[in-house]
Image 1 (cartoon, helix red, strand yellow):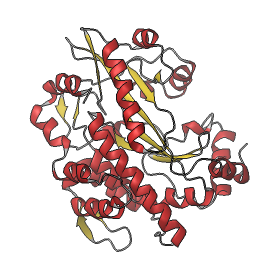
Image 2: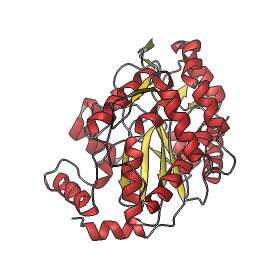
Image 3: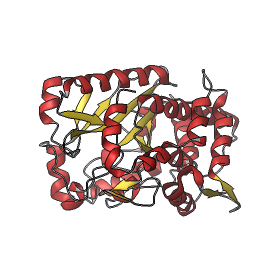
Amino acid sequence: MANGASLAAVFAGTVAGTVGLEEELLLVDRRTQLPVDAAGLLDDIGDPRIKPELPACQVEIATAVHKNPSAAVDELRRCRTLLADACGPGYAMIAAPVHPLVDGPVGLSATARSAGLDGRYREIAHRRLVSSLQVHLAFGDAACTLTVYNALRNVLPELAALAGCAPFAGGRDTGLCSVRPVISGQLPRQGVPPVIASWDEFAADLNWAVRGGAISDPSQWWWELRPHVRFGTLELRVLDVPATTERAGAIVRFVYALAAAFADRHRLGDLPVPAPSWRIAENRWSALRYGVRGQLLDLRTGTARSTERCLHDLIDTAESYAHDGLDDVRALVEKPPVDHLRALGAQRVVPWLAEAFRG
C-alpha cells in the first residue's frame, strides 16, 4: 500500500523541467478505411518505444525523457516515420482521437492487461477506441508537483478546447468538437480529476480503491490529469491526439511552458485555489461541445468569457517560458483543425489523416 511520504519521495526524485510523451495511433486498411489488428506490424518493427494498446488496432508511442519539448516531439516524429514505413501499400497509420467511421465494439490486443480489463468491463472495454496525446511533466519537487496539478486541473477545459478534433463517430457528425470524452466516460475515473490536497490524501484514495478491488493498481486512476506514481510526473491526458506532429509540437510546447509558468507562480505563492470539480466539468462540457468557439465561466465568479479569449490569456501567461514563442498555438486558436475535418466530412477524413500522418 502507498503512503504519502513514499509518494512524495518519488515526485521529489525527478529532474525538474524534463518531459516525455505518449501518443496513441490507429492502423487502418487503406481500401476499407477500417481498423485492422496491429500485432503483426509491431512484431515487424520490434521497437520497445512502440507498443500495443488495449484495442488490437491501436499502438502507442512512448518517448524517452527529454530536457525540452522540441526534442520529445522530434522523437515522436521519428517513431511515426518508423510506423508509416512499416505499413506497406495496403495499410496506413492515422492519428485520430476517434475513428470517424466505427460504430460498435472492436477486438482487444492479446495482452494480459487487455484480458483483465475485458473481464472486468466487458463490452465497454471493446468500445473504448479513443486516442490521446499524453504529456508527462516533471518538477523535481513534491509540493510543486501537487500545486501545479491543481492549477492545471482548473484549465483542463481550455486545453481540451485547443486540442479538440474528433467531431465524427459511426460516419456521422456528432455535433461535438470532440466526442472522445463521451466515449471515454463509459469507464469510471474519467474526466475532471479530484482535488488532491496532500500526498497523504492521494495515498489514502489510491489505497481505498485498491483495497476494495475497484482498481488493481494506480495505473487505472484514469482521469484527464493524474500524478503518475511510477514516473513521478504529472501526466496530462486531456488532449485529443493531433493529426500531425507539427500540431503536436505546438500543443506540447504550450503545455510545457504553461506548466513552467505555474511552477514559478507556486514558488511565489501566487496560484489560485482549486475549483470544485463540477464547475470545471461545466466548462469541460462547453469545450467538448464547441471547442474554441464556445464560452467558459470564470471558476470563481461565473462570468462568461469566450474560450478564445481564455486561451489567448493562457498563451500570454506561458509565452515567456517558450523559447520559440507560441505563434503556432495562437494559429490553432484562430483556425481550429476541427473546422477542416468538418469541411472534409466523415467519409474523407481517414484518407486525409493517412496522408497527413508524417507531417
